[in-house]
Length: 289
Image 1 (cartoon, rainbow, N blue to C red):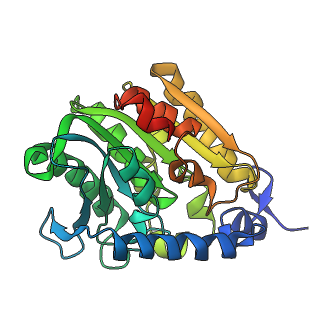
Image 2: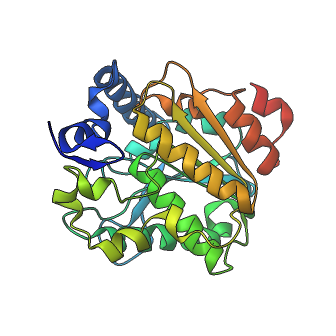
């Protein structure tokens, strides 16, 4: 019998829990999302490659929403902290535009060019850059949502926790995190340890669940109903912790795997958009379209 290493999982079982392509329909959903993001980037004429730091990977694409100052979603894509680019962050750009919201389609330097601590620093820098340059970006600096999917949800969550712990959440109206990992301890016992290369101290310091000290801005947490037990547990556990300090909503989207769990962000009138409409103070008619 294989040795148990974490929550009754043997190594092979834990690896499977954190391999999102093993879920039914995952490959097709991944390909669909990739095509949609590329289409949005090619047809919506964003301002591309805007720098927010010294590293060549610290860029974002900007999808404006008219001529006035509009609310914004600062979104970081997934890809196991190793893959994807600013185009990947455009998967819901078309829907976001219909709501009168600016999309900051974020990207940062990734493993192996940098380490995970650097990536969190970059995510914090991106949020601060957007807030500090809101006027030139066509953004209302008081209506910003920090969002992400998968590893991007971890980065966004870690940034929100750090900003909250530093009492630096001015202008951040809410957060929206989809299918993230908020406790990295099981990951460094799995195959992901091979590229994360974290010490035990770093693992704790980079886990939003383990560093949460102060209330976060209102937070929306989503995970797919067809995702692994571990991914669902990660979201539920983080929701419970955040809820003890502030406002957090938790939704399991039935029939969705890891790569289409954020379909609600792509669907106007969804519960996620009801949350965003409330906290970004969107026009009610637009949010229902």
